[in-house]
Length: 265
Ligand SMILES: Nc1ncnc2c1ncn2[C@@H]1O[C@H](COP(=O)(O)OP(=O)(O)OP(=O)(O)O)[C@@H](O)[C@H]1O
Ligand SMILES: [Mg+2]
Image (cartoon, helix red, strand yellow):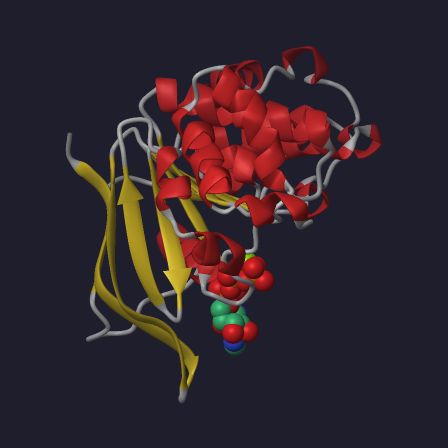
């Protein structure tokens, strides 16, 4: 499969003297899910912004290649819900991107179906829960039919049901062959990743694996801590391990090697 997102030797600074990305190289194949993890300020949103085209890469700063259109979902769905009617919210986005009117109805139906909100097409999203608002925000973006979808901590303001709904959407997108970049600090979310990019000091290490949420656990314990995961998250992995999930199995192996970890958090 061909690569969909490719960074080669990318360096980036917002201002002189503070290099956010240093010679960063990684790639995501079409139809795969990449999780991006790293401490606060490590450059996750910068990468998301570069992929979404919100941040321009200056000349001589390395190579950045995105195949097809990309679109981004942010942490706070409130900023993306503007009208008192779901359909109007999506139409607003379609109009902004100059999608032909004759296409609108089909795209709105398809996008709302994918996020399981079709029955709310004419409802007032301002009255929705945060999780429902986020699904509408995601639908607005999916209506543009992007090849690459970036979620920048898009579940972090949601309750557990809301988080689960978003993960289901990511899995559905993957099934449709879309490429997903998922910035996250929720260990559960690594389980649906095909590979994980760990950012540290401006550089990235990419972990791939057959079901490579497994990547997450190949990170050292220190790296996981540095990436901002709560150690208590490991307990949740027991459930997944029982269900045969590789990520979880690896995490539990780490716990066995370092039993003191289980006492923290
Ligand atoms: N618009 C900006 N102007 C100047 N500096 C910025 C800007 N945006 C981010 N930075 C700085 O660049 C670095 C990387 O920020 P970025 O937002 O990419 O990190 P992050 O990993 O997404 O962090 P968080 O976990 O807090 O979301 C930080 O030091 C941040 O302060
Ligand atoms: Mg960020």
